[in-house]
Structure formats: structure tokens, C-alpha cells
Length: 144
Image (cartoon, rainbow, N blue to C red; front, side):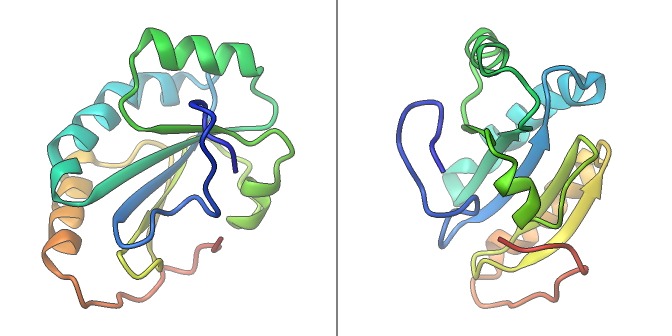
């Protein structure tokens, strides 16, 4: 996949880090409303090994995604899923926002459709960051 900054990555999750992979769109009012909380979550936990990857849906115009990302100064990785392949690989994501919490071992440990409870999500991230050896069970969500 290609990030907005032009760099590439083999998958959405960041190897060795706890990662929140969030499928969103600039036309999704819930997505736009939750973005400041996503930024705070990233800023709070990034130094401990937490990453966020915001995956814009295939129907979202690239220019809109770029404008949104730049105007909000999003500090995390943003990807445009031009072909829909990422959404397909992660369980055929249709609804936005849909987010997946992935542990350091690359396993999906939680899935959120709609805005998550950010306080509860922050606690889950903290627990995963403390536990470098856990292999939590997937909640049945798709994988990449």
C-alpha cells in the first residue's frame, strides 16, 4: 500500500507495534467527528509503540483525503484504498468508521464498527503495550 507521504508498506498493521487500523471517509460525519480523538489517542500512546493507520475508502476522492489530512495535520499514516483491496482483505469493510485493534504479533484483538468508546480503547491499547508477549484471540474480524 502507498501512504499519502509516498512511502510504501506491505500491510496496514505496523510490525512489532500495537496498531489501530481505521477505515474512514471524508464524507462520513462520524469519521470526521472522531478524528480529533484519534489524534489524541495516537499522541498519547505513540511513544510507547502505538501506531494508527487511517485507510480512506475507495469511493473517497483522493483530493478530499489529502485536503482533510493536511488541514487537520493528521500525525499518523493515511492511506487511500484506491482499489478497495484493503477493505476486502480486512473482511470486506463496507461501513465507516470500522476500526481494528491489532497487537504486536499482528493479530486482530478487537473490531469496532462506528465510533469506539475512546476511554475503553485507550485502556485496551495500554494493556497491549504493556504485554509484549500476549497473543490475544481475535474477535472474529477479518485479517490482512
